[in-house]
Image 1 (cartoon, rainbow, N blue to C red):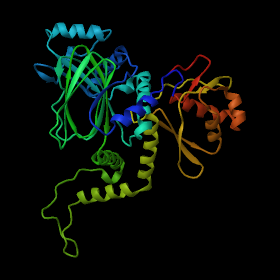
Image 2: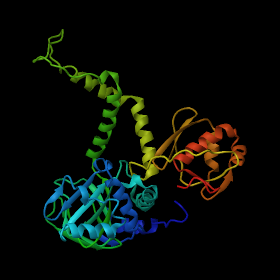
Image 3: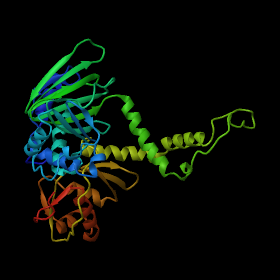
Image 4: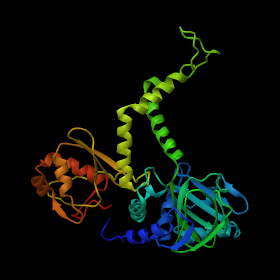
Length: 396
């Protein structure tokens, strides 16, 4: 955690003891994020052609979801959230509206890192999520939505109201109870897995929502996606299925099996699931996820900058380490991984202490790593924001 950022751990510990895994609740819990900060992320997500890939949804109170909102999305003429709201309220004649964006945080490292520090305190109290969590930013005015209550919700949900007010109706599974929670600026809405919900955004509402998978089916979906990606890369998976006879030809023993290449795809899937490379991929992905506190995708690495032996550096992120075979390891920071070999990199890692600045030459001497091999390593660490330059270069 950056020394300038607050530690939420004590508040999260009290929250977890009182509410986690229990009933829905609304509690005061300001995340320290300004609406202006998140608006920049929302606007960047809506800029073409990114809006289709960013999960942008726009709805009005009278027409429901609009598949082509066009000029109703933020543009260059909307310098901030107030200007955007004013324009929409004029264009829509004060009809309610809602703009939401899924997984937008990677567009701004500062906002992403702030949210990561926010949720880290909770994960320390309740355990680290094994799967990616979903982040959503929303701006709304007197609108319900964006969707009807899910039939079988399988996630824990945390919603911070950054400005304005909202209410949420909740229907927990297996009970006849209905909850209605109300929240204003600086409040946190929480409900455990198994609650269908319906949001209602009121005056000037801006929210941050974190959705945490809580059912085994989400694990299956995640692993299946990883194996499907691996299969697409395998030459054995290439080619079209073609036209097959029915029934399929019998084998020498007279038994009729599954048609090829369907059976071949099944064998390939099973083989990839059991191979050591899949176990390694899952292990490395977990290291990256732990360093990102589950917030995926992570912001991309920043551009490389020239480093020289006269520079001074300091650590700016925790470097998670997992072994990766004899003499090898994988480091993870800010959602990215780096493969290293030998003992010298570990000596470097041991000397990269938070808040401690040291020169590149000094680090090379103390870690017994030649500068010519140390500088490429430090360059990689700088790109994934694990270190900063203290000479005024390399801002986050």
